[in-house]
Image (cartoon, rainbow, N blue to C red; front, side):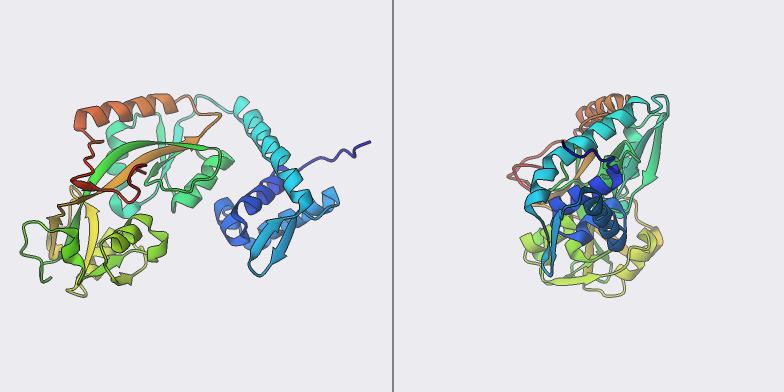
Length: 310
C-alpha cells in the first residue's frame, strides 16, 4: 500500500520553484522568502516524504530522480489548491493590481482604464509581482513584462510608449531637437538600479553600443533626476509625456530612427481569474484603439524583443 501523507502546499510550492529555477536564491525571491526559510520548507517536505528531492551543490540545485517524479504531480497539487481557494474567495471585492516600473509611472496608463472597483498596489519588480499573483495575494500586475515568465501566468500587451532621452541642459547634446540612439554612445546611461535587473535599459545599452553606465538607488523620481545632473555626460530614458520638474535643469529630447518603445502589459494568473479582470482587459483594448497605443512599425521603432513585443 502507498503511504498517505498530508502535504503542506507551501512546502510543495517551495520545491516546485526551486526545481524550476535550479537556484535557491531565485526561487526564494519569487516567493518573497529568505533562502534559509525556503531551504527549511524543502527539508521538511523531504523528511515527510522520506526521500531526497533536490541535490544541493555549489552551482545551484537540481532535482533527484525522486524529485523529477514528484515534480509533475506536485504542480497538479498546487493548481488544485489554487482552484479550491478561488472557489470560496470573495467575488465582490475590488480587483487587486500591483504595478512596477515606478520611475516610468505605470499609474499614468492604468488610471486611464481603471474603474472604481480596482485596488492598486505597489510591487517592487516583475519577479515579486509574479510571485504575488501565483500565491493569490493579488489578482493582476501592470508593468513591463519580459521573458522568461513563470508557468501559470498570462499577459496581454496594453501600450507601446515612446521614450525620450533625458539629460542635463549642460549636456553636450542638449541643444539637439531630436537624437538617434547611436548618438548617445559617448554618454553615460544613468540607471536607478543594477542594470542587469533593468531589462529595458540593459538591452538598450547593449543594442546601441553604450558602454558608459552608472547605477544608483531607486529613491524616487526627484532624487533620480537630481543625480542625473551630477555629471553632464549622463542621460537616461523616460516616457515622452512624463512631466519633468521645471526647476530640474533637464531636457527631454525625442529619440528617432529608431524610436525606442516601452511596452506596458497586464499580467494575471491563467486560471481562477477575478471577475473584474475581463472588464479591465476590455477597457485596455478600447483605450488602445482610441489612443493608438499599439502602433508599431519595425522600420521606425525599436523593441528589446522584436517579433514578440513584450
